[in-house]
Structures are given as structure tokens and as C-alpha cells.
Length: 159
Image (cartoon, rainbow, N blue to C red; front, side, top):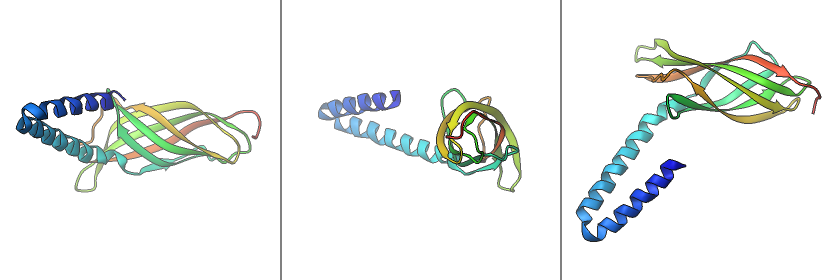
């Protein structure tokens, strides 16, 4: 949200400056546009599908996407399906970031855990967004993700 406010302030300042110094204003706008396009291209590595393992057969994670956040965190979006006959409560996910080079070999560069209360009724699925801290890890090559459901507690009631 703060980024959008800053962008609006910069855009307003550029419009005001364009009346007096149009070459400067358009030069700054072009530089900002190039920086934005560079960031979007750099950020695209985090949108790759993740491999999901689950030793917990009644909890299934799918549709995972990752994006860098602030302070070394990553924003993880996905869908959690409850295959049990009871309401799904607490969930724990283990997340591993892999840095994959051009030769096809991958090395783990970050590992973290996400814990949250899912509140998914029996036989249903819910989307979730969680923040995962991976110790400031960044991939130098192509980032791949490995996610494991390590615990999922069923609560009382089926619906």
C-alpha cells in the first residue's frame, strides 16, 4: 500500500515538474518505467509452481505461488483442501527454496515454516496467503520451491 502512495506522490511531482522542465520530467519518468520493468522481470522468478509433498494424507496444498516480500520474507499463496471427515484446524508447512542453475542441478538456499489456522470444513478447500521467512535467501538462478505439509490437525465437527 505504501508503495502505491509513493508512486502517486512521484507521479504528481512529475506532472508538476513537466510544466517547467519537461525534458527532466520525462527523463525521470522513463528511468522509473525502466526500473519498474526491471523489477517485474526480476520478480517473475518467484511465480514458478512448487513441488508439494504431504505425509498428512487428508491435507492437500495446490496452486502455490511465491513472491518476494519485505525483510527477506516471501509471500506464499495457495489452496488448502481438506480430504478428511472433520474440520481442518492448525496447519504446518515446511517450505524449501531451491536455487537451480543452468545444468539442472538445484541446491537448497533457504528453509522456513508456515503455521496457521486454516478452518477448512470437511471435504472443502480454502485459499490462503501466508508469509514465510527463509533467512533472507535469494536464488541466483531459477528458483524452485518444495513444500511439505508436516502437520494438519482436525478439529471437531464436519461442517
